[in-house]
Image 1 (spheres, helix red, strand yellow):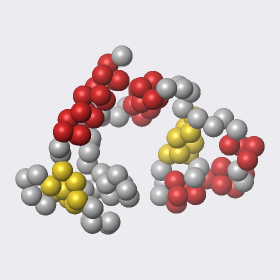
Image 2: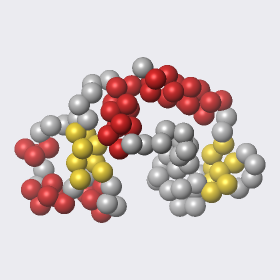
Image 3: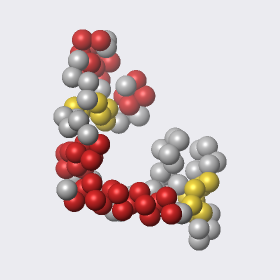
Length: 106
């Protein structure tokens, strides 16, 4: 949560008891959004709806490790400027997008 506060990000959680366990000063600075759904597909739909997210435009545009915006290095590859990890759109991307669309459609 400290990192979310430092980076001015939203802290998503299912833990309704954060106020019982974390310092009040930290909680006062945090933007906390409680996710009510129990299962991943419903959680995804809840977050997409709550934040009016565009589920097509920004898919696979950030580093999975450090969340930095990826930079295209060639027709097939993207690189993270922070951690230097390289990514490509292989079958895992196609499969993940198909699963995402099914989850959002239900």
